[in-house]
Length: 231
Image 1 (cartoon, helix red, strand yellow):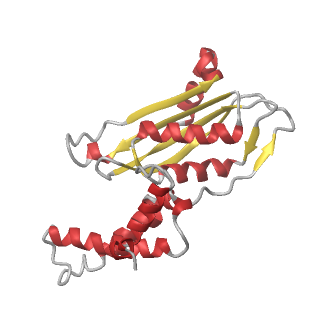
Image 2 (tube, one colour; image 1 turned 180 degrees about the vertical axis):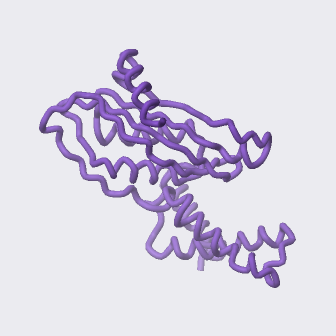
């Protein structure tokens, strides 16, 4: 048994990532470095360590029926739900050729966003719109696939500014459009639940590429249509 075996499956995965020269920041996907059976073992390790956190918070999980399974539930939530985008491979997305040579503005949204702030692990809940200006060489994807890719990218601890850039990179690579725009508006519970506790503040940001960046009229059309669709 190696030293890494004694430390747990997380140490084995970490060593594998380091050996491969791979980054493993909070918003990185590491699915290709996780071997069969290791995700289940990682759940058990995270559960045990979360139990240590509850003990350190002086919570009696033995006699408190409400928290007896909390470590298990939170570990399952982290790995299988709210941080799932780190641990599973990209969902399959079928790309179709642009047979009809579509070259008009397409907008998809609002797509519901559920993410988490990497600073405090508090929820980020909001909406996102994708604008696409295809060309005759662009690949097209089905409407539901936008939502699947958004969910995969967003289900990681991160900051909103980096999340939409990462999504834009992914869509740009898959579709190769003349223009790509992403607009996101979200509530940040690290600001609403703690800190200043401002319940009304939201964060809105965008990524504009290609024709959306170069053509102000197209950009205005996109923003107007997104505004109408959100009423």
